[in-house]
Length: 319
Image 1 (tube, rainbow, N blue to C red):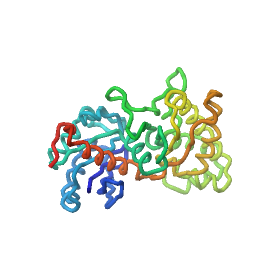
Image 2: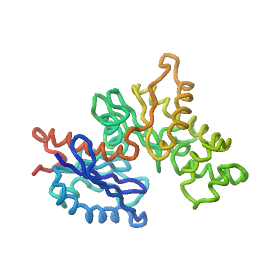
Image 3: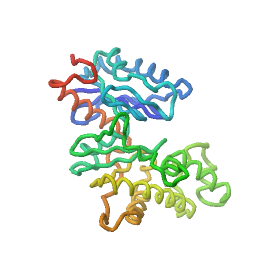
Image 4: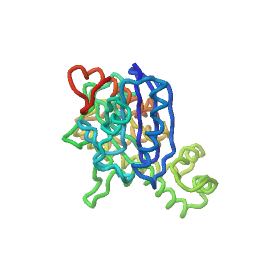
């Protein structure tokens, strides 16, 4: 069975054709115009869908959206990155334009489902997924199903407070936060290897240079990453104490650092756990890398189509 998957993030739009077992048949990445907001992204989606539908004849559409959603109704609660999404009925909008049933989830929830069924969390239960990208998001899969709180509740690890003054995990661990920290540090450490690498490239996205600086033994890069991971471990300790996942899967742009990030996180997390819960859950990098959201969206759509014989999905009907 062929399906479509859409990933709508704060800085990217991806459209995929794939199958019910998570295989990707075609992928398209579209550069978004942030100034155009949600309306601009919807125009890009509307333009791309007819060709994909004609070519692959999908049965349904799964969407991973970068922000809280009401998964029951397919309505977007809000976007923290772009205007024009709050209260928007995305599932109904997609169905009106395609005739296909559409199913909407928060992107971290969707990625958690993908990793649980086809990635690093396969065979584990519960699976907690944390994404370190333009924001910090979380998703929880229990007994092969996404956990939902009361709408529009999600497992918002990024908004967990690290102190009573209101500092949240995103303010220490999101890509933009690490970028800012690097800019501040290289300004006062201009002779570091990290500073030289940053100066030789275009500004923005400075966190992408950490890997190269670490490979050269740069002490500044090591300190920045270690301190970032310590904050992340502190935030994740609350996840362990409350939800007790068997595995924590780390995805998003910063996860592409791989071993340097994961080894530090494995070492840091037990320091914040009560003794009874030691050594804590396994911590691994995402197995699907940047495909976690679309693979999860394919799984979501397949699951909903299979269940459609007894329920009507988000107010739509299957062909």
